Image 1 (tube, rainbow over the protein chains, first blue to last red):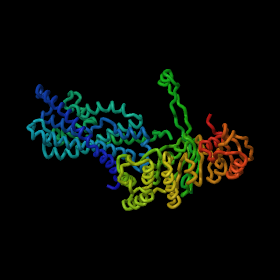
Image 2 (cartoon, rainbow over the protein chains, first blue to last red):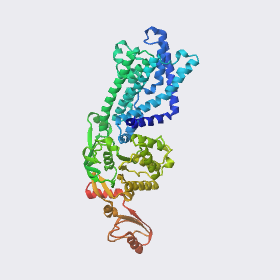
Image 3 (cartoon, each protein chain N blue to C red):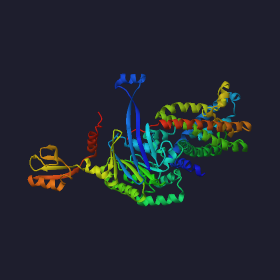
Image 4 (cartoon, each protein chain N blue to C red):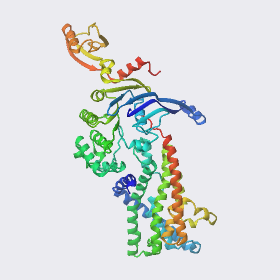
Length: 274
Length: 330
């Protein structure tokens, strides 16, 4: 672990700090609960009318919604605000005073930022949607456990790769923010693209047939659609392994692109004033 | 071999320019005009290990740009820089592991974390071996009297307390070279004294090479044996502090409030800089006429209400340097 020590420290700093914000976690949980309820009602209405046309069962669709709401903060739909702040204030200069790989340093911090926001909300969501709902007799609307032991075991690497891939996507956004000195433009494009193409809005199988082949090959599928379908064994066996390979492959590709882009951006970066 | 070597260093920024008003904005959309700003226009100097060098000069003179290039976060347009045998911006990671940097206007500690947690993180980031880290940290904590602050989040520290913590943060990895960019800016008098005392000890006792920029002549006076005056991106003078003092810096000002109207004063080595009804501002060089002698001469001949001696403000000194070097901007 020794070579990773500085990067783990960067991750830890961010993670620890955000865990302090308990009110934010509660507020996030409440919002995501509310939206989860609405999305489940929409699914219920759709299944009531067209159950035969649906690619997955209602129970799986409900679990898909709860998983998505629990892990919403792992979706890279807005650039890391700390990067935007550092660029505007010149803190980026201090970053390059650290004897660290610049990409790795930012990556570790952004990953810490995402996980620290996601995990407390996910725990609350599991408690509520997984345990409280069945206890109060609303079991059919509950978050189900993984469909099988195999699914549970496969979900572990799928979750790790989901976070790794999401951070790689986030890094691309961060780099654009640093190059353009503004996060608004990036976020206004990133948010809808990620929500639609990750499968966060709808599982990708619900989109038109003609789109299916490329929808399932594009990188954002690895952030929501692939890991969640592994969870309820819609993807299993070889298909699940292919899903993991897609996540891992895109992570490597996006990290490589990000590193190149970052090196270029850092060379052009000027620290002005003073 | 010198520890720091700078040769013909130049840095040019390109700044977009447009005419004011709406028509200017519209024509800027079509064709953008660029103006070149020469932040550094050929700076050369070298520094031996263990030296303490002060960079002075007004805002925009190029001091900070020089420090940023030396610390590896800016790339020069041309010229050559070596710090301990490394080119900072080419070999950034190895270079920055060996230097410490304090920017007076920025914080490198984590705003919301207690000071001690920030130190721990920096030790990880610089991969300082744990036993060495504890020893170094304890040493810095006692030198900078940080014990009572360690458990406080950085955001709750006063500026003076924070600067002391920043110094410790910059030195945990035991760098042999320290760059300080306006380290005393905004500090109150006791904090300034504490910072100067600390920098002096670091330099004299631990042999750390220090390069600092400042606007505060007292910093220079207290610390530096050698001073570089920089203006418009050029080195105007590079000399031991003692010889600077005897030249332009040695000039003193005498402010005299007379009981009646201000008289004419004609004395060799004394010039009247300004007068108003009942007071005079005189410039004199203590090497020509010592202050006590001048004061005695004036009070012997005139009734005086108040009298005090001033040093020349740094801005004025620099302005004079510009004139001497014909470097004043048009």
